[in-house]
Image (cartoon, rainbow, N blue to C red; front, side):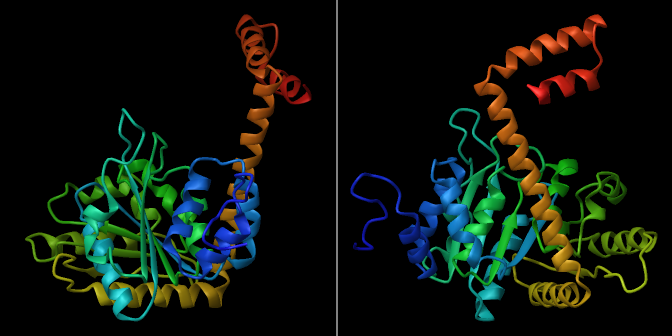
Amino acid sequence: MSRSSSRTSRGRVDVPDLVARARDGQSRAVARLISLVEDESPALREVTAALAPHTGRAQVVGITGAPGVGKSTSTNALVRALRAAGRTVGVVAVDPSSPFSGGALLGDRVRMGDHADDDGVYIRSMAARGHLGGLSWSTPQAVRVLDAAGYDVVLVETVGVGQSEVEVAGLADSTVVLLAPGMGDGIQAAKAGILEVGDVYVVNKADRDGAAQVARDLRSMLALAERREGAWRPPILKTSAQTGDGVAEVVAALDEHRTWSQASGALVRRRERRARAEIEAIAVAALRSRWADLGGHAELDRLAAAVVSGESDPYAAADRLLAD
């Protein structure tokens, strides 16, 4: 059968063909696979199974920070630096969702048009669709597609929703936390929990007044954190993503963190935690689907009423729901 089509004569998605073409570097096949996982296609299980043997090779980097710190510009600069080093790059840019269509409000080609014609770069915008944590629910699957397609580095740029955005740390092998002068009190960032997730901290817009003070505040706050012997000590770097100054140092720091993670076993532990969370999420989703198919929502409503009236308690009600 020709590879010119990813469907069989009966219209069913030809997953092995799609995966083979994606691994051959065909961006349309990559796009189709991501669409299948994003749309929860009936072929999702087959897609995931076909991708599994080819995953685990890419360096997955999360890029996070409050709105306005320059995440998109920094991602663009990182792509340029990585390409200059001869590495292929996949980008998942998670955008806020349109309240009307549910689609991403910002276009990837608009924001990162410098790389639109580069065969070594694939960029995909995904809508958050109301999902908290700065990520789309299907982001992990999109990362898996890009990993299996053979990209050396996969960058995940989050929405920038403040306190909930730390979720990216669970997805990435390395997390870059961006800050910038003039973005408010650094202590507020610490309270938001964003300073607990970084492997590399970057003060962007370093040519502006106050950048050195932000770096000093960061250094002081990180010094208070308790770290066991041999633990990774996150570097604090200054960049100007607009001009590219300091970006090569960020790439070097990410490579150093990857080397440390591999040698210490931290990379495997982080990926196992990620897999456990994904398995749990799939199991919970399947359980909810089963409840819906069996009329479980009505049963849940009845049990909730029993708890409110005092006829039952939450644990007994949960046991009954699981038994059904």
